[in-house]
Image 1: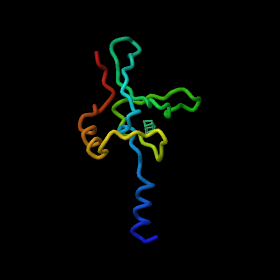
Image 2: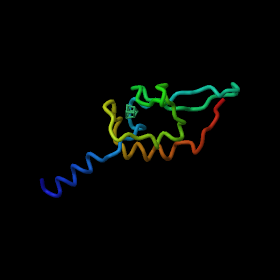
Image 3: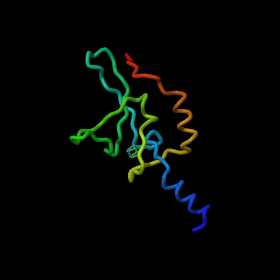
Image 4: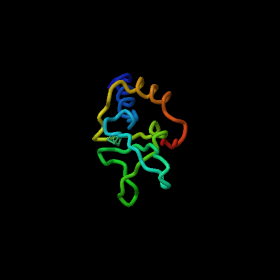
Length: 100
Ligand code: SF4
């Protein structure tokens, strides 16, 4: 294998998968404990996000850009990843906001 081909293979296999760019990454509302409104959470519709004891794990929406996998057999990309992630970074809230 040439050095160029080896470098391309390494780059292709070491690329991170960003869950935010996957069709299975869904935005869901969650009621706040005191009933004063709701917050936004993200979940994996393919059931890949689990707590240690097996329950489903939801993440705060403003952290969605940090959700990534080294590999995922259920990854369904939604389009141009770089462009999508850049737009998402600009539009994400900076903390966990409560909506009414
Ligand atoms: S299917 Fe895989 S890549 Fe898609 S959101 Fe779930 S864990 Fe992330």
